[in-house]
Length: 191
Image (cartoon, rainbow, N blue to C red; front, side, top):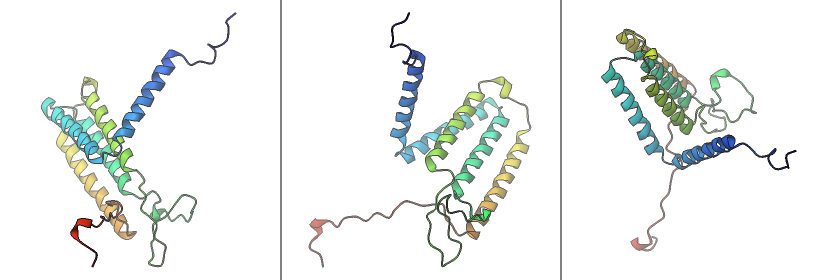
């Protein structure tokens, strides 16, 4: 008969994956405040992917799928969490945008926060890069048709999004809270 202790302890494999998950989360937490550096890294990955596509002259369907996914993420980033077009009056779901002058101001809350946007776009780009290493994903397709279709889809989607922004009077671009600088004491007394 086994003497206690082993039954309640997780296996070494489970402990390894738990530690790996904690290390990964700690790395993401460290990167969170560095918005510009994160986006430059994501842009560098995207440029590396596009360079690989141009060099190999293939995997256009993967590029198209990545572009559509990035467009979907961008639209979710621009859209408010509570869409005023849905016409719901449920205040349980959170704050809503004002649609009349006499309504109370409610802050713009994104459907997809910036960090999740970056994280999803970076993961998708890494998956797309990985797909270019397998010939099974190199489906022969006439790429100019895909490019024209993507440009048309992008223009129509952005036109609809801009109309939505104008109709419900919201602006998803914010630069954060206004920061006031302390007066320099060396410049002299108050006047």
